[in-house]
Length: 189
Image (cartoon, rainbow, N blue to C red; front, side, top):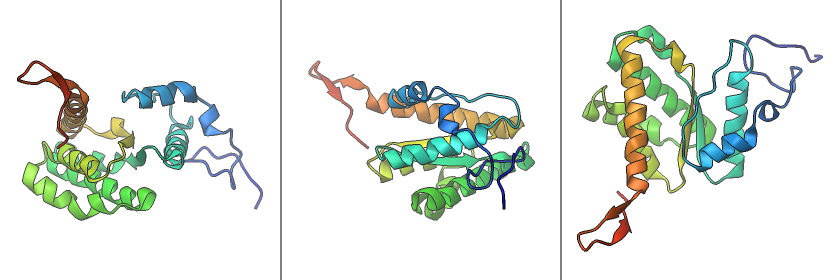
């Protein structure tokens, strides 16, 4: 079948005409943000290649090998609207499924329900990410697509848990003042 122009979803170079997604943005700048452990947003109009770029970045980072990267699409959680528990279930199910598919890592799939039950919907997503990070010595990067589809309390809870987890992870990386006045690294947990 000959290649064709696709505007209905992620591109597949074997089927669609494409421009290398990693050349469509400033890859060195994106990699610099990643190396500095900063989060970033990719914002552009519909059907301009955001998903294709994120999926390509995920594959690139996993091939690079110094971090684990997983791409998730949280759009299905939109239907949960104000039901935070259902929204978090949908997001964590997606994270578990993609962890297996992209990283061959079943940790989230096998444990997310336990963490969600224990921590509750207001902290379950953060608890799962924290535990998953501790499960493997390589840093974890999660590329989240369609977060703008979330609404109401589910959106607020999701964003707050991401922010709290980012702050907590940063705090654990910072030196701290010990009782003898020496600056030391925080013990790993």
